[in-house]
Length: 486
Image 1 (cartoon, rainbow, N blue to C red):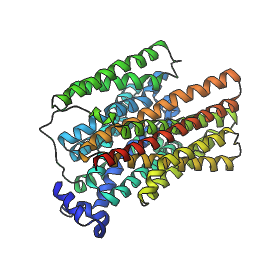
Image 2: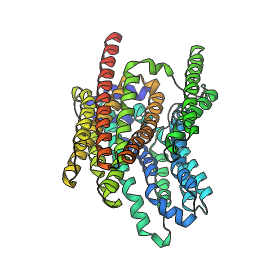
Image 3: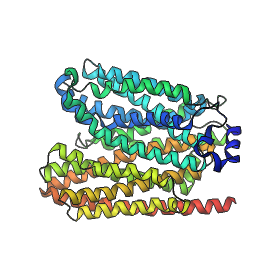
Image 4: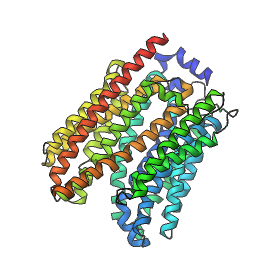
């Protein structure tokens, strides 16, 4: 890999994206990127695609309310808990091997989901599917950081953002289309079975085009760190996912409180292992860097606002304005679609614009939320405002991602990948849990969904401004650090 990067540095202007793989026996960077992003596409689609199929699953499998919750959340829990561990496994055993293993597990478990004879089997298969997705997706961002440099990396990160947005659009629409089509009387099953042929094609292209990479087999997996981190994330994410439907029972608050000492013990353990010259699961010293920690908190806040919007808006459109479920599912696509367009554009602009993208994006999100809070009821005006919000989120997401990947040395690529992806999952889950509860409580107390929606949107505007300030401070801290190093 060092010789590969040397060849990249020698010919930056002439070879463009193809420079990246000049030492990899003719492998094509376009196909490499497509293979990596294809896995991320599948993993992201399956976060949301099952939601609209829940009524069909309930009717066909006679699933209980608890089983339906686990069918949705089992995937998310396994996925969020293993992203950091998956990134470290890729460093130890090879990103190519872990990506192929994750894709294989994901494809086979998708088949098991599609053929599940009852709800318990479907719950188990969804958990395994989340494990496969985590192993697969945790290699994507690391692979981009390692195999692409300079302008090629910026374009690859732009494509990363674009695919993330497109997969959200498709995930929102595909489930409804496939269930409504009722292909061969299969009902909900095609939402999982469609992953199988796509997964097989991706396995073939990934096997051919993903280059062999260096491994760190002298390193060992920090099993104590894996256990502590997994337990901490489980205690944090489980009540966030299930707490609202459980009425925020005492066990949800106990889990949230218990997660704090577990995380504290995890950080202490990782620092101790690193201090002894061992192999920690995560280099927690990265979080002491303001340019990293502030950027991650900012990204969590913007992600929370985005997921909260999707959830609260759907409730408001149906309960407050009496719109149909189809209408409430289609309108937010304006946000998701514009988000998908911003990343590729920012990947081709100058460094100064990229540095301003994240803080300006947070302010655009705030403008969108504030305008919606002021009372946007016409469809056209709502779509325009959501489009502006999507542009803002796309800029904040892409700008923060570029900042993080450019702020650390390449040896920290697995840590950045794991931290960033975990931040996205926890931030999104936190947004739905906190702001969804705020909206529902306000609507229940006042009996006025419009007032509840306006208040919640106003709070989200404030959160977006705070996220903008945080990422601006992160950028300044990064500039100070770079100046100190030089």
